[in-house]
Image (tube, rainbow, N blue to C red; front, side, top):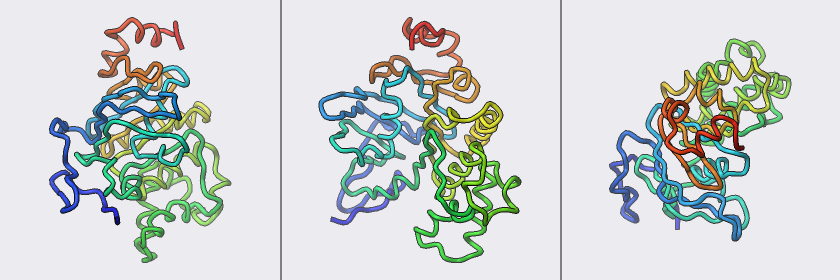
Length: 276
């Protein structure tokens, strides 16, 4: 049966009720309810319920292997591509159940973009890297493609550095520039949500600072969820923090509350470097 694209929160189709979360918070873009992810018999994410407000940055923190990245990938169903991986619970995007069989997976990944830990530009020109998604979606007009590429590179704070070398290989860029290019590539699809999986962990301090500054600018227009092991980074750029441990969310709150007055001793121990 043919799938349908994602619908605005007030829209329904005649084949399924896409808006079926009665407690969906209207000021939120994303919401997970009792979300669990299993690799075979191993539970990597255990009944996680979180909401993500519009135009904000939520940092997911916790020790390695605690389920942060698995949870992040489950939001836009990247885990669907992993053998023996199954998901239980619910993920809602603007009130739409993303696990509905009638939701178009390509549309999910357009509207909920993802950038990975290590930049992976295509072995093509800078221009073709950014234009690849729109071209795949049927945009053929050269002027429109040029507009999209320029706009996306500007939003990714890369335009001034590459505007005179758009047709050179993206592989010639520095690591930090490649990561911003990957962000521009995601922005070219006009998402409303960006998922960032440790986007600065492989970068030098100068490039990391540029990525952090970029994130602070992007949250004016996008909802951002970032996985980070850097506590200082989480404190600098996020509005909310969720602390993960062994697949569960131990604590979720504002950045100020988590870092200055955590409710759980386990959170305090992690923030202070006693565990993890």
